[in-house]
Amino acid sequence: MTRAKTRPGPSTAERIRSACARSRDAVLALPASDPVPTTMHHLRTCGDVVIGVGSGSHAVTTAWSSGGHGVPAVLELTDYTPLPLREQVRSLVWLRGTIHPVAPNAQRALASEVAGETAYESLLDVGHGTTLLRLRLASAVAADATGAEPVDVDELRLATPDPFWEFESAWLRHLCDDHSEVIDLLARRLPANLRHGRVRPLAIDRYGITLRVEAPDADHDVRLPFGEPVDDFAALSRAVRILVGCPFLNGLRNR
Image 1 (cartoon, rainbow, N blue to C red):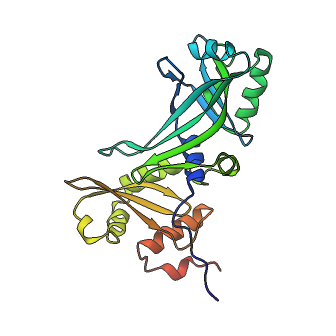
Image 2 (cartoon, rainbow, N blue to C red):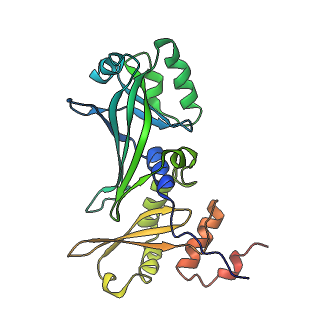
Image 3 (cartoon, one colour):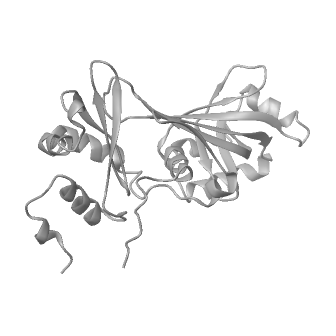
């Protein structure tokens, strides 16, 4: 039987979903005005993005002055690496659409709905300095070191974040601070011309781990795919041990 080829990494829709879940750094760009910092953002399965902004922000005034038609807007998300690397930005996401107001009597209900899926402290301030807006999504683009790529809105709406997004930052810091020997073993899988640069873990997901090589000439990102996607921490640990050539591999098999 021929084994199906494993996807080497998450789809663009999955990457955007994970970045939306991870990133706490976003700005809302509106026509003819400075970008507005946001206090929260949440991409819903209906295709809308719930955005929190300061109640005194011109974004709120602009949304209400649209007469229900919406105002063109772009939400820009910045996904930073959790480690102190030479280049801190890991990826950028642009969510484009029209911004719409949320009725005052619906603000708290919408905040409760979002809180049921994602914890944001700023949701406690809704109605007390924070106002929610809706971005009706029309297009989405993700960009990283490999380039920029758009994604279909319906595909994005149905995608889910990586199962390890919530713990990725802590896991990468732990790997770097306490298990440098694992990084050294992973570095052996790099192309020979990249093994002399400074190697740090850049990202991890259910499909593999990405290493950042800070060489004198430039930064290089190399992805090391797992043999198959993983969905829990036991499988993730096993997949990493396989990548580093663990001599106790047999002991990790399911019994």
